[in-house]
Figure 1 (cartoon, rainbow, N blue to C red):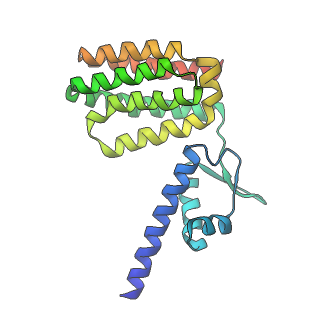
Figure 2 (figure 1 turned 180 degrees about the horizontal axis):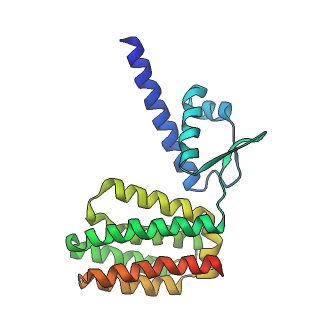
Length: 213
């Protein structure tokens, strides 16, 4: 019985360390190229090196960490092609969520989206634009009530965003995304699912084009 309890605690520890490390990477607190030393992480999280090692393996499989000979584990960088492919995945996930969400949307959801757009207009911080952009999209998707799908979308967006903060401010800016957000929201209010999905796909494709330019 004691062995089963220890195994369960080890799994819980690995899950907790994995979630915490993922959040640190996706938030940008652990930047691209940062070396991840098992002993230092074990001390930081108050666990043994075993759950840290397992967490690093999990995050490596997710593409957030890479293991280099003689360097150990580091926060992974992504090439332009990898980012473009990640945006293809975003298109698939987000258009599905929006298609499911539109029939369930209420007036309160539309108001919340408008309020986020107003905050976006009033902000001068490119980093805040990225957060508000994600917040806007998630407000539109949450009525789909697909918990795993929503989590995958948020993690995907944050994973890409840490590579694209500079591009968001200098190549894309604020005006064009806002105009596209307005059109997407209007299609949602009209419950025009084909038009909303088409606009969303184009919206993400514009980011792909900006990466290629």
